[in-house]
Length: 235
Image (tube, rainbow, N blue to C red; front, side):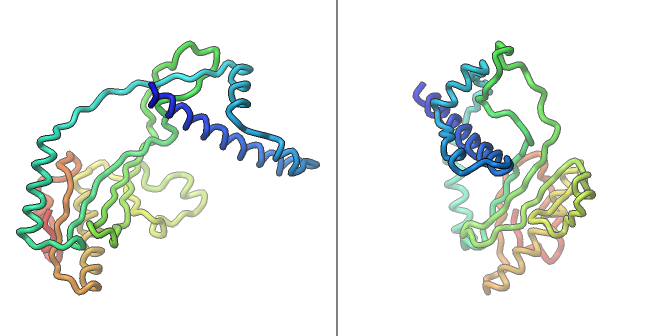
């Protein structure tokens, strides 16, 4: 219960701060308004509670499924990994880890506020506007590979309208339904060249360990599909 109260306070703090920002923007855009009006707006919890009573907005919690973890297997994996690194003589600069994460744009938070007309939070269909990001860095933290971004559209409408050059983005933008091909291309076109350049500049041996999970998006024969110049990478 204490944890839920703490989370609720965080949500209130965020809403109050956002209200202050919105009010400040309105003051700036309204002719004849002054800084005094902006300072007069408190944007505190008391004002938020009054707003809730006037509008009938109330808080509800979205429930998710619990996920169990295998602690013993995790401990064994850590031990095996340490033995591998020590036996092969990998330096922190040569050990890399990559992992994916999904981003649902405009996804509702677990706890939110609904109007008085709604007695409960109705079920919502999963957001279709979804993208996947792949992040990768080494154990020393001094080389962060350019993130891979996978979206359903190769060139979104907004890109065309604003004349966005994907090559100048801070991510490698891709759209492909074949995850295996996409991941293999990323290894050979982005990860391999970046790591090789880094090791040569640091005067370190071309000796790399790439750690990743056994997700379905990772092809099982990835090691065999490395280009000849990147055979120094162990996956």
